[in-house]
Amino acid sequence: MVASPRKMGSGVPAWPAARVGRRAAARIAQPGANATVGRRALSLLAGLAVVLGLLLASGAARASGELFTVGGITVDVTADDVGEARQRAIAEGQAEAARVLMARLTRPADHERLPLPEPGEVVDMVRDFSIADEKTSDVRYIAELTVSFDPEAIAQRLRMAGLPFVKAASPPLLVVPLYQPGPDAAWVLWDEPTPNPWRQAWLAQSAGRGGFIPLVVPFGDLTDLATLSPEQAAAGEAEALAALAERYEASQVLIARAQAAGGALIARAEGPRFLAGPVSTERPLGDDPAQAMEDVAGVLIGQLAAAWKARNLIDPAQGNQLTALAQVDGFEEWLTLRQRLDAMARVDYVQLQALTPDRAQLTLYYRGEPMDLTQAMRQNDLDLMKDGDYWILATRERAEARTLNATPPAAN
Image (cartoon, rainbow, N blue to C red; front, side, top):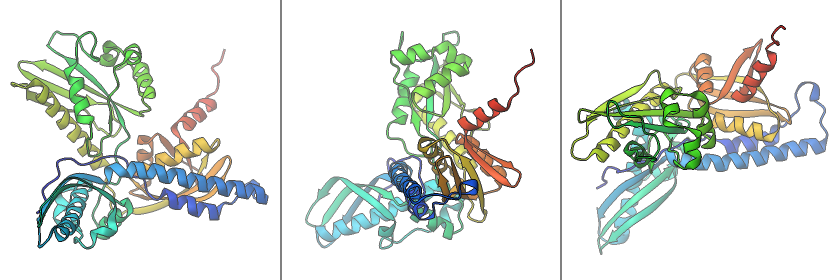
């Protein structure tokens, strides 16, 4: 018998970055006016593509290692001997983990149609697994499994079944937990001068949480206190919030407010670009306010995850492709652009057609319409625009600089 999981991992899956690197090494070509390239230059570019593929492959492994990992699968099997019991338990546990993962990635309405693998089939979909809390007898095997799956194998199975699914988590959100202990009390953000129990609730929820919403809760050290005050956070001061987000390398901020009033906790969260509007909930504080706060934070996270999932479902029936040119200022900017593309839910695959020191030509295979893709790009700090017959792709930083440079100076 396989029990339901207690925890599930989360994160951002990355699609075949390594394949892009390997194929790119065989396709390097200089477009346009730079068509003539010496052997040494080609060798350097090919080497760059190979190194890029390896780096992105390692990033892909880290990202997919969370969203496509299922933990807390308890197995308990009795057989003629413990060896047979262990073998059956691992196969059944991996099959159950595959079911949990497919349910996580798809709509509840489609769960009855999930293309579930048999225990003998699932082994080809597993990247690796770990075992904890083993207990055995002569004929019985009990353990807890954590299983990591190959993202492409799972996605391919869902595509073949024609089921819409989500393949990526949201960008990491920096949590700004504002707490008001009473109707007329001042907002509390950090643990100074008084503790912030709402912050502790988010710390508890962010530890080992699964799902689509990676959370970053600030340390609350002296640098944080100097960067963002409770008054600035409550007023939504963009500059101070951006400074704190920059410190934690987060592209989006989640402002989570909680007010204690009349024995209840009223909570509201807003900020991420994928939200159409704020999410909110309330709950009595009861005899265990700390647990109530943690539960409320969990409800808000669930609402955020549902909103992300609704906006990023990939429908296998709506496949498209386009070719884009990207200007890049060296390897570091190209790596940033490529990593952001990997984190996009709507992009199935990126094919690198040509790479030079200052530009790249890419074919993007994606789901939905071009307008859906451009909106998804903005959510991932990328800019995609049509320029005549060409699509131009850039990081948000480059696009903003281009706009600034194109603005004529004010008249004296």
